[in-house]
Image (cartoon, rainbow, N blue to C red):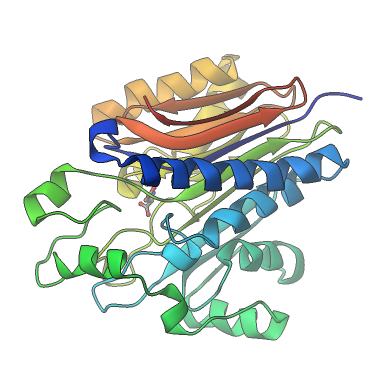
Length: 315
Ligand code: ASP
């Protein structure tokens, strides 16, 4: 039996210990651990990497602490529009959705797109219609409401600014104190297959149907057994322009870089030069893994069959 690995993130950004209460820190660590346990449980029972990443993401989508599913941020119009993608490194199949509303678990819908739609990427009302057809669970607007997200949006809704997920401060602080609460997971299963998944509410006060990097295959999410599985978090516009996730794969495939060196090159060289704040998690088909950030922190965790089990927040 070969080894298996699961790595997750709950978003990167200016996450500082001095801004955190003990209770909130514990709450984050607990959800991260539950997410790890859910995905790892699938791997331990011989399940596939694709099912493991889905299981890990669902736990974080169901928790209001993360900017995905239930905790998704408000758009300019005061609603939630969510993006998600999933990719199977074994066969390069992928499914993605953008701008979907009232879907409890956008990652489940992305998986339906991958398996049952003959397409890769659905958006807006069409994606919602498909969710209804497939019987994917929907929730009323109230399910996605939290005072914390509402206050966050209220602070900037009358401006033209949009911002990454952050705590409830004044506008200047909001723009400085950047946090990206997107969630992601990558896994290598005992059969040597790898997969990646990412889910997000995008950016607070986003408008015109803005879509970030998370659901864009190759930018925020990518998986290929030959190289790596990657899930990103950060300022999506830069990650799209950098084709960040696929660039890691290319550096491995065409330049022979290791997973860790390739991720370092993209996050701490290429993205920094573009002003692209954030980070990413990755695994390869040998079960090697890495978590790389160029920001102050990233909610993250890793668990593998060698006995590793860690959840981390700060740099
Ligand atoms: N990358 C996401 C986006 O731009 C934001 C995040 O990572 O939190 O939509």
